[in-house]
Length: 250
Length: 91
Image 1: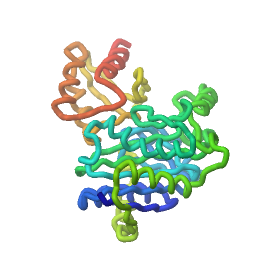
Image 2: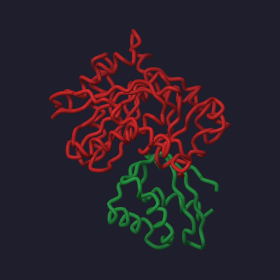
Image 3: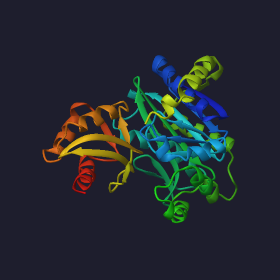
Image 4: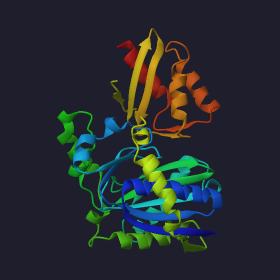
C-alpha cells in the first residue's frame, strides 16, 4: 500500500496541531496513510485533551516567556516541546491497525524502537504509551480514533531540559518541587545522552522514515505537499487552536 | 473549584472535583492525563456520575455504563473512582 510522507520542519504548536487535524481528514477521505515528521519552534506546552490548562501549566509564566499553551486532540499528559525533540504523527485507516488500543500503541511505537536499535539503543515499549531506555522515559505517545482513522503522535527526546520543563509545568506541591525535579531527571532522558555522537533531527528522521516504511509494509512513500492544505490549516489555527474556547475547554 | 489529585496504583494522575448531597454525587468534574475513547464521552460520564449513589452498586453501575456506551478508558478503572470518592465522602 502506498503512503504519503511529509516533513514539515519546525513550526508553532498551533500550526502542528492544525496540520494533524487536516491530515486526519485527508486520510479519512482518501484511505491513504500519512506519516509526518516535525518539530516545535517556538517552545510550547501542550496539554492532554482531558486536562485543565490552569491545573497543569503556569500560564502566566508561559505568556511572559512567549510560550504557546495548546490543548491536544489526544489524551495523556502535559508536555513541554522545545527544539531538542523529534515528533511524528502517523495516521492510518483503523483497519490497518489492531482494534485493540493497547496493541496498536505498541505496533506504532515498534518503528521508533527498531530505529533506535540501529543506533545500538535497546529501547522498550512501556505500556500504555511510553518508550523507555534503561528504565528512563525517552518517548511519550498519544492516540485518538476518529472518522475511521487512528492518529498517533509522539515525541522522541533527543535532549531534555527538565529545569525549563518544571518552570512551566505546574507541580502539585511546591514544597516537593526540588525533589520532584531530581526524581524526574532520573526517570526521563534524551537519547543523545546515550550516544557517542549526538544525533540530529534530520538523521533520526531518515532512520525512522525507513523503519515506518518497513514495519507497515508500505510499498512506496509519496511526498505530500502541505501547501495544498494551507487555507484549511490557517482556518483551524485561527478558529480553534488559538481560541480559549478550545484551549481552556476544561 | 478545588480539584484534588488522585493517582491510582498503575493508573494515571486524576484531578477530581466532587461535591455530595448525602450519599449522592451533586457535582463531579474529572480531569487528568488518562485516555478515553471516544474523547467526547467525558461529558456523558460526568453527567452519569450525578445519577450515582455511593451506597448503591456504584462500581457495577459505572462498569455497565462504560460497556453500554462503548467507552474505553485507560488510566483508571471504576473501582479507582469509587475508592477516591469514598475517601472524599467519608471525610
